[in-house]
Image (cartoon, rainbow, N blue to C red):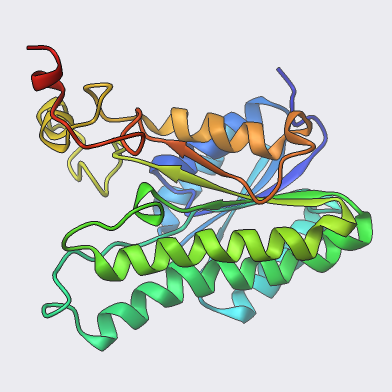
Length: 257
């Protein structure tokens, strides 16, 4: 416990799902957190339930002005920024013929530009302190292509490439930049009502573990990369996917025949 004792983090998309789980875990590990999201009601409730370690801000990650306000609030409240978890994202399902220019521009503005602006906002502070950890949440779809997700895949591959390039820029200043690549995770994006049986989804997708992942499992990966335990890890990509990208998507039932 207390693997993030006395550290300060900004976590985007923290009102629910992976972001909420990450905020709760980081707080339990001694971290103070600025939680951000566009879902104000949910975000305020999560921050209140965490307690004094957490503060919520409504935040459009595609806005450079909003990022300046988030950084200013973090410094005013806690005096420093040690960690950034770029978690906020949106999805779009559809073939390239079904995807408009507005669709892909909207995805890029949140999923890529939003992360880029976040890094740009905190990196000078981390360089000056000569310490820091940036965790960019990508996806297994940043490790491969997926039918019907070309716009989303473009974003998640972009996050992967951006992570590696900025890891090189930040390395001389002891600032680490890594990406986490969740697979099918039981979040509102996959399971909007929170009541569906996700095992058939896992079986249909051919996930070797035979189940979808849970938000705390993604949060644990972010915790490791944010902590000093990952002090010599930068530019890496960590898949949290139940071995989904380890090989062919063979149905688990066939493996058990």
